[in-house]
Image (tube, rainbow, N blue to C red; front, side, top):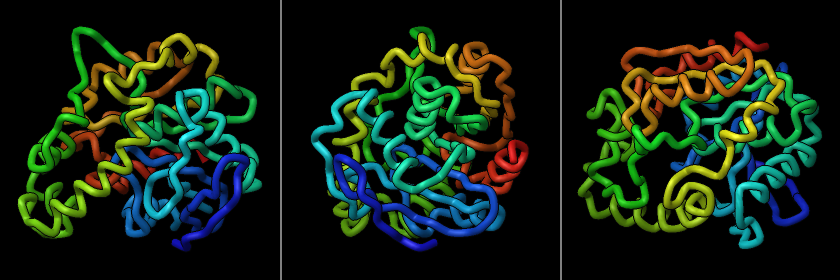
Length: 258
């Protein structure tokens, strides 16, 4: 994957690009994105992939003018326009899935295919979503992965979660990234999306890990109910980071809409 920069109205945007074939735009979750992301790399074996960083993520500039859900949605459409991509397969994970769903609701005739990997954006009082902003580093692997030990290794590049080097990098990076993510996720990830999902006209595929402890599978049923014609792929032995734990299954899901 090659790291590039484009200019939007508000801010320069860093993005990863690679592969060939049908265009796919991937929107990352609150945990961010790296050039070594296994899902993006596998996706690029079959598609022309564009994976933009949200402002404040990676080495991208922060953007104080992005203040609410509408700002994030329109910014993401500005990125697609700047990339010169028409009707890509729009794929989003977690927070990125929330943004992708908003994009499809706001501009229903500009998105024909939508893949949502355990998206955030809804809230059920009987099934509250854990507060990631109050979660300590050593608690994250158990919250995000089915295989906790393997997940910890993926998150820390083999370092212990209490390793000073890992903790320093994690805390500094998270302060910057979650400062941006908090605008739409804190204190709860509910910004009225439930009342807009009826506008989505895209052929929609939901992909959910059966072991997702952050956004439990009951939310999959709620999304399926609210998006007309949406189909659900439930993946066993997968947690919230389903695109890392079950990369092949997630890529195959995208291929179903190609």
